[in-house]
Length: 207
Ligand code: 5GP
Image (cartoon, rainbow, N blue to C red; front, top):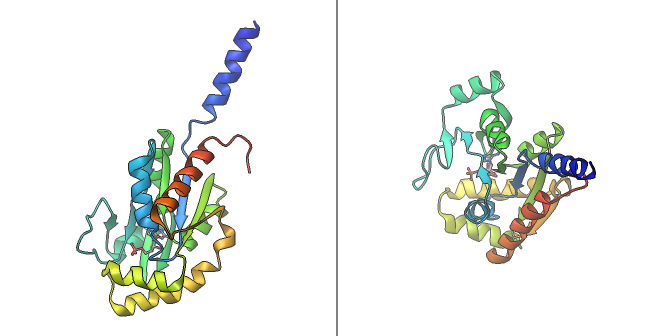
C-alpha cells in the first residue's frame, strides 16, 4: 500500500517537470547573446531554439528558416492581426516576432525553448505570466560593445550608431530580468548560461 502511494507521488512529481520552459535571453546588440545561445544549443540537450520572424533584410551568412524566417512587412502585419505571435516588437527599425505555434509544439514535446529576443518582447512574455526565465547579457563596457559591432561587420556605421544608442535604453530594463551575465570572457559567460538553464530545470519551489 505504502509502496503504491509513494510510487504515485514520485510519478506525480516527475510529471510536473515534463512541460518545457522558456529561456529568454536579451541584451544590447553586440553583447554576444546570439553566440551564447548557439553554443548553448550545441552543449545542452533537450533545448530548442525559437526561430523568429523578421522584416529585416537577410545578412550574407544567414539562412532563412535557420537564423530567421525573413518575411515582408505585409505578411508580418497579417500574422500580427491573426494573433500568430507570442510577442512582437519593432527593433532598430525592423519588425521581429516569436511564432506561438512553434513554441507550444516544442514545449509540449518537453523541450525547453531558448528565445533570443529584445527587452520589449521579454517584457511582453513576462506580462502574460508564462513560465519563463529571463536572462540579460551585457558587455563589460560600451567600448567593447562598439568594438564587437564593428568586428561583426554586418551593419553600416549608421546602424551601429542606432544599436549603440538603443543599448542605453535597453540597459534600463536589466532589473526586470531574473539573471545577469556579464559577457567579458566567452567561456565563463557560457558556463553561467548553462548553469542557469540546468539550475532552473531542477527548480522545485516556484518563484
Ligand atoms: P539582429 O537584427 O541583430 O539579428 O537582432 C536585433 C535584435 O532583435 C536583437 O536584440 C534580437 O534579440 C532581437 N530579436 C530577434 N528576434 C526577435 C523576436 O522574435 N522578438 C523580439 N522582440 N526581438 C527579437
